[in-house]
Every structure is written in C-alpha cells, then in structure tokens.
Length: 99
Image (cartoon, rainbow, N blue to C red):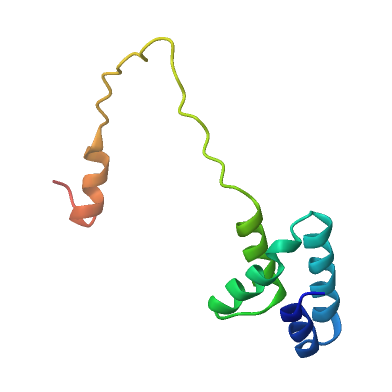
C-alpha cells in the first residue's frame, strides 16, 4: 500500500475510512496504481482531503478529456430573416406605463 495512503488512512475513521479503502481498491483495480500518490497530493493541494475531493482528483487524473470533433455540414444552413418584436419588453423599462 502506498505510504501516503497509509498515512491518510490512519487519519480517518469509520465510514470515511471504508470509502477511502474502496476508492483505493478502485484505483488499483483500474490499473492506475501509479496515480495513487498523485491523487492524494492533488487533493491536498486543493485543500481538502475528503473522499469526494480525492475521487474527483482521481477522475480528473485518470480520464482523458473528450472534445468532440466539430460538426461538418454538407450544405450551409439557410439564413433566417428573424426580427423579433422586442417592444413587449418596453413595459419592463418604463415600469408598466404606456410609452
């Protein structure tokens, strides 16, 4: 077990300890054991070593960002000649008085 995790587990009790062990098990099962210390260090840098913050740091470290490719249209969409009637909002700026 990584040394940082040993120290962390000594500092927590009860359900928090159980959740931490389950997260550690998840990290190792996923094959990301090399991230164990990095995740705890990052959570500590963010100022909170609660299990939710540690899990969020793990997800951030282990899952690559996904940026979908831009949509490529075969034709240009038609331009609409849209002219909304914004006079209905005049009531808001005049306090309900007739203009």
